[in-house]
Length: 115
Image (cartoon, rainbow, N blue to C red; front, side, top):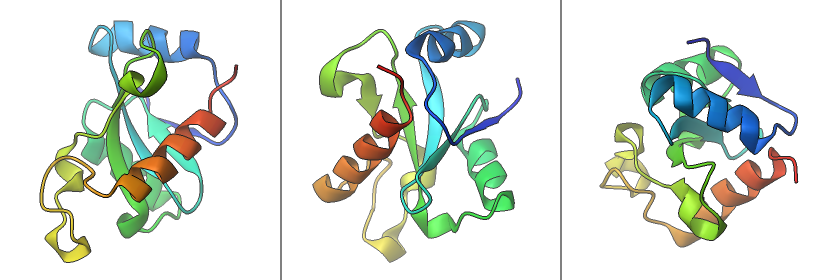
């Protein structure tokens, strides 16, 4: 599967098709909260993280999430990834612990979705 760096809005149908091809109902994504882009389509969050770093992102701005295109509201974004374990940034678990950072991630993901 090819990693895509999303800079313009895409459809949930596009996400769903990626999910079906890989994990069923879920798509892994890495969000750059500064550049307001995200990478999708990787088997691992770390693959998407590497693609964004190669594209010019700083690792400190990258956060891994799982997207569930069929879900609605806040349930469609899960803040769980091994790349989120960053004691040096105050995040000691796989989950994004800071509610303000969660909101920034939600804003970027929402801006990159059509409809």
